[in-house]
Length: 170
Image (cartoon, rainbow, N blue to C red; front, top):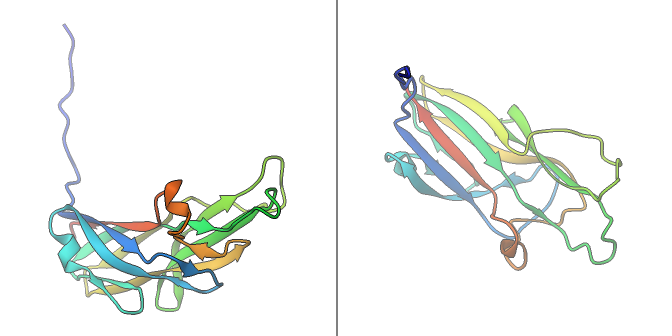
């Protein structure tokens, strides 16, 4: 006879959605990675988030939120396939960078020319219990990449960048 302990769920998020990004953005330092729409994953959070003309998103009040943001960098490396490319990005609330930095990196084997480290995803925890909060994903630094979410070539090999927003109980 075996004993299996009962499993209790301590978290049951009321909502979760993906937030899509614009395609074919030209890379530049300090650029906001523009969000353009939402896709439902759980509940109706996708219809409560405001996607602003500036590319930011506004999270509705009354909840905490867990955010994961990713980006896809592109450059044509036909001239030198050993080129190293990197991009660091981070969530912002106004002018303030918040949460952890995310990184996309294409580094050829054996290279140590860019000794930086970061998670693949930019992660941030938002307290919107007292009011709605506007957030955006911004390029902090980059080398070699020329575009973000380049749909003329990149979609064949990888998905585009996006954010996942998990709504948590207050």
